[in-house]
Structures are given as C-alpha cells and as structure tokens.
Image (cartoon, rainbow, N blue to C red; front, side, top):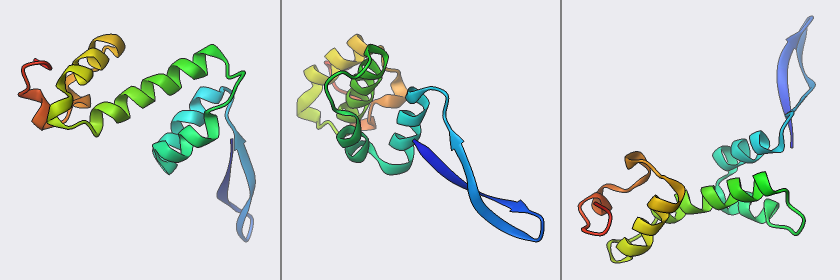
Length: 102
C-alpha cells in the first residue's frame, strides 16, 4: 500500500513523497481504519495470503462481527470472545448484559 504525503518543500507544497510500509500487516490495519472493513476484506481476500495476514484478517473479521452483533447472537459472540481473546471494549453495551457474554 502506498500513501502519498503532502509535505512542505522549498517555496510550496509537493505531494511526490510516498511512504511504503515495511510490513503488509501495518498497511492492512491502516486500510481498515481509513477505508473500512468492507473495502479491506475485498482487497485482501485471496489465495496464497501469508498466515500472519490471514490470521489478522480473521481477527478483524471477528471484531467486526462482534461490533455489529445483535442480542440474539450471544452464543456466537461469546465463542468469538473466547477464541480471539477480545476485551470488554470490543463488545457492544447491549451485549455486555447478555448471559452468554458474561
């Protein structure tokens, strides 16, 4: 992933500076933050993805699933919390009172 950065050079601004990230996981997380889960998932789902990126993609998928879960999905959320060791801040407020999630 390449991000153009605007920086001051001499008498004006230039945008020809590019920042290449040394590890693809950093690029994946930044894309997730800047463009959202749907775009990140579309761009990174492919065969031959390295194991570390595949596990990061699965983790981000679990976080998004928990974030958008309904109260009826308590058991699924509880399983994801245990599997990925998600913390309280990952869980929506209405699910914190669920019997399965406690």
